[in-house]
Length: 254
Image (cartoon, rainbow, N blue to C red):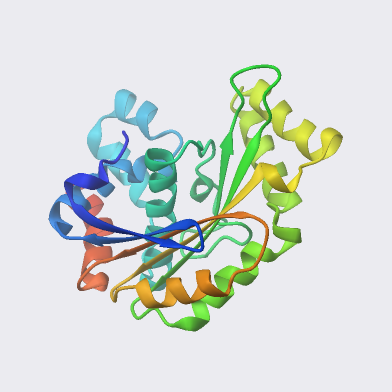
């Protein structure tokens, strides 16, 4: 399932120093919640479909519910990461081959490391692999500090995805039989090296207030060498919106 953001949001594009900055308001939160409910299983439960086929909807919902966070501060962070992942898949040329929330140590813990790694796998032998390093920040009131923290995370590891994050993606691809894709990442990291032109950044935010001013400030101040993608989602009453996403799965289990 690929989300169609146009159906429940309105976007405004801004050109800042030659790069696009996109601000997206969720204007139909009920429809947005319905769509996000539809992708939750893919983000948290690798065996959801097989359990659904074998044991039915009630048991599959129970399996998924045991993986969903119950603490709000974790829910809102996960919601931002899910939105970022789905946006990358729907609106860019990059794929997100691994749903990393499946590998949480505990459902009410945050994962460390790069939030989302997008990968462009070349279609021809003479093409080169490319990476999108995404940092996501979710706040009710987006102020300067989380944006600065996101920028620092993007600049870490010389602006490249961390070696640990790339190894994690390659390992999980190998586990699922995607050996050719895993090998391309291994070769880039361990053999060929990753050049700066093979990496893009995305600074992604999810908030209740409009992120436009904060994100424009970040982009005005950025003087690095990497292609920048900046995306800020916002929605009225963010807390109830987020809670409704996860509560929707509870309803399915009744």
